[in-house]
Length: 245
Image 1: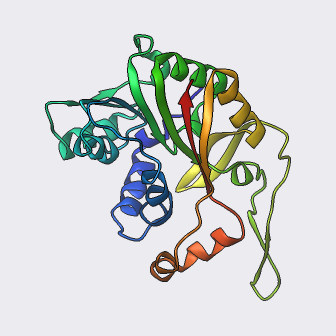
Image 2: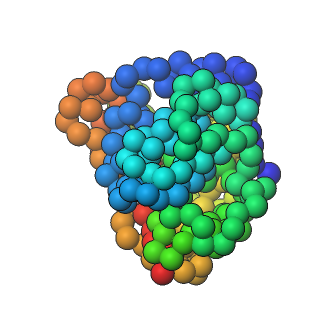
């Protein structure tokens, strides 16, 4: 079960409001680090899983990709992507990756930004990605950090009586599975996995880990969004680059 929360109109309205802000976690923390790991895309075939509003897929075209397909299970996202971006070598499709028919060894670069934690069967997902990648093809994805998804309580940061943050609450880290949280709306579902599960799953299907980043904000980013100071105490995101061998 993969939750299509972005077609919840109330959620989508609030999400859009966050993304239009210049200073947000995506623009200041996740994407700057994500972009540093992109391979050479000249003449490459690209698939962006959970393409959202299509900005990254369009970026890949700008980097010389031969053809880019952006997919998303959210009709809201795909509709917005088609409004924002148009190119003869760029296609947006409203479909889940699990439901796609993809020729083996046909894609040079598969990307996904903050999507995989919504997908229930991680092993099946990564196995299909490995099969779809060409030899020496690259997978680059970001997810919510396992430290964050491990939290199961209603309180994430624990404060003292004066309101000063003491620590981030981590509980039941080894208990993998469904989590429900309040983010913009109630009952946003995602799946917690340990770091070892994430990494070992990649290795088991023939993907070689090339780089892992737990993003740290720059001084300038913290000036623009002071809440990023928390990132020095616990990471929000995990970014992984792997190559098919």
